[in-house]
Structure formats: structure tokens, C-alpha cells
Length: 181
Image 1 (cartoon, rainbow, N blue to C red):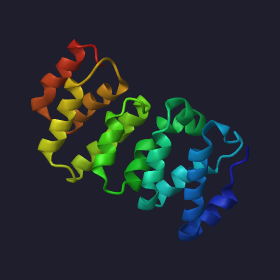
Image 2 (image 1 turned 120 degrees about the vertical axis):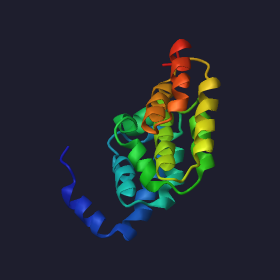
Image 3 (image 1 turned 180 degrees about the vertical axis):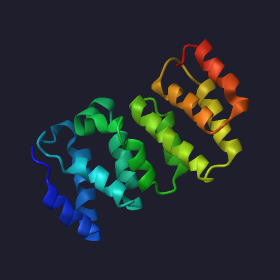
């Protein structure tokens, strides 16, 4: 299909007026799930536009959408889970750290979604929003509470390195030794 260039121009020039319609597109996708017409794409574009607009009011709906069962998330947004979701979540993040933690801990949520949420928390740590002791403690709990391989542990190892947590290098060894990554 042809890219809706004119529609995007109008939406970006009228950001405040567009936000309620974009949020409603997310709500429609959440309500209809896999019954949503496969030609309907507004919810997909809404994710990126609301992220671009840094719409904090959309965070809860976006979190709800990506917390649906993995097969539903795949149907609704496909590869967005692995290409851009962490940026969307970060740009719309509303300050609810507990929501992020619950999403990461919820094994019913797609592992790639959970890894992207973890990425958001890592950036919040780097931004100074999460104290180092809290962040390290959370990562350690996730590692030692592991039941088996999950993509999230690859992301944890990456974050340990990017956060320069030299004292947590043994945790990476632990994940290798226990086939978690």
C-alpha cells in the first residue's frame, strides 16, 4: 500500500487534535484483538506517532496493548516488537516504574516485549531516574529467579555491560553456566 504521506503531515501539524483519535485507535486494537480487520493500520501508526509526540497520556494504553498474549501482539503490531518498541515506550513513559517492573516479571507477556521494557528501565537508570542499588537489585532478582532460557537474559547481560556494572560480571557468568542465555 501507498504510504499515507499527506495524512501524516496533517496529523503532525495538528498533534493535540490528533492524540485522542490515535489513542482511540489503540483502544480499538485492544478491544478487537485478532478480530481487528487486517487492513486496519491506524493503531500501528498511532504507536509511532504517539511515541514521536512523547504522549505520556498514551503510555498505559500502549503498555496494555503490548501486554496482550504474544500471538495477539504479533497479529496487531508484528515486527514493531523488535524494531522500535523500546523507543516508543521510553518516549511515552509516564513515571510508573512499578508498571514497568510488573511487565518485565509477567512471563505471559512476549519475551521481546519484556526485553524492550527492560531496555526502558536501563535507560531510566542511565538518566538518573533509578538509583543504582535498586537497579542492580532488580537485575539480580531477575537473574536468580530464572527458570530457563529467555531473551530477556541476553538483554540483561547487555545492560550490565552498558551500565558498567563490573561487579555484576559474575552474574553474566551465572547466566551462561545455567543456560539462561
